Amino acid sequence: MGETSAQAAQRVGAGFTATVEQYEGALRYNLDGVRRLVASLPDGSYEELLDVGCGTGWATLAVAERFGTRRAIGVDPSRGMLEKYAAAVEAVGVTAETHAADVLEMPVADGSVDAVISTMAFHWFVDKAAATRAMARTLRPGGVFALLAGGEGVEREYRELLESLTPAVPERWIATYDRGPTGLAEMQDHLEQAGLEPIDIWLEVRRRQTPFEDFLKRMEVIGGHLNEGVDPEILEGHRRRVWEATKAASDAQGRYEYTFSKLFVIARRPTVGVA
Image (cartoon, rainbow, N blue to C red):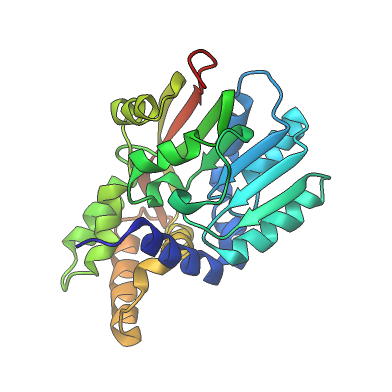
């Protein structure tokens, strides 16, 4: 029997709390995607915002800057992230409410916000269809849903590298790719099942080169929870072999090339036929 959504959220949250101080420096690439997602939101009033998997607040700050959001609810399983989120959001004059919770159990009232946004958290949700429904229920009629997530084919080279190693790395390191990427058709199904009208769904695929040490540092920051239960000495052996294999797969300047894809989603809760 697989882990529940709540169990997964607790594990992911603990991992991100442990690496919260390194998060923003290691994941600066995500900020560009967040800004482009927010720039794609339709004009409107977004005074009350729900940010699911809010992290340190990049998405909320971008929405507030563009639309003058007055109140934001941050939901994240990581208490360390929520502390930074509240400080960052309130520093720009937005009233912050935070909840350390799983997306399926967040204490947010139905039909209570103008927009819900989730950036680079969707791939951690165990049941993506249920997560989409949970976020959609919080929208007022006419409210907007915005999502940024890892897309199909993301980091396929690194997955193949992990699969090639002997002895094998923890199965969880590879399995996370099985439940992570989401395709265009699959995402449209999630939206329609949640009662949302798709406005725009697109996939952006890039070939990225970065120093392999930086790549591995990012993987440690976002995947610390995947090491839970692994003996420290065995874990160090896995890390050493991954480091050596990634270095060997890099060019003469130590640059590792890999595929990075992002899924962008904009949808709306209908105003017609809503009680």
